[in-house]
Image (cartoon, rainbow, N blue to C red; front, side, top):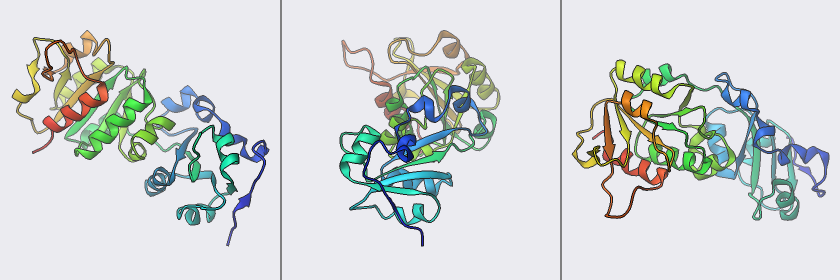
Length: 268
């Protein structure tokens, strides 16, 4: 039976891989590759367990030497697993409160927009949402409310970024997502394939979300917090929808808006 590998020096070269930042774990071309290239980091036992359950391939892990989580037994049978104290793990991962386990995985292949749309009835599409915490929250909301997948544009944050994975509670590694380079063209294709596409906007001329009868196949589009969806995307959408706001308030955080939209427009 393989054993844990003890480490007591945070500068141990064998731990260097855990100090890599997002760009070092996977380059921009690798993140854009639908075939899956580069690595992603899973922090915490829940995220690691969900990555394993999703079939992702682990590479190496670092665990608490005194209290290794149960998932360690699975990891140690497949990959090198290093074990260190709180100080070592905090210095290596740059987390003030280190997780009981941090693991690196190979990035899995990603769905295409066409394949995702062919098997879905409810999709979320985001344009220029570049905060990974917002992407993670959107994924958690969509997963919890029964939606089928996410489409991100080239300027939006990576769903497999560390913060996205943490905020989504690991659902980002399971929830299907696809990437598009031309959001307006993708919206037009989705409309042509039978989806109703609702562009979320605070504009006064948009239809109140409470007045929308959810169709059988629906895509809800969300844009960046200050500028919103581009004119091209709004023009390509089937309808524009707004969340009614209290007087003097313009809009909600995009993650909060996604929760309301996914609930109001869910399959009933």
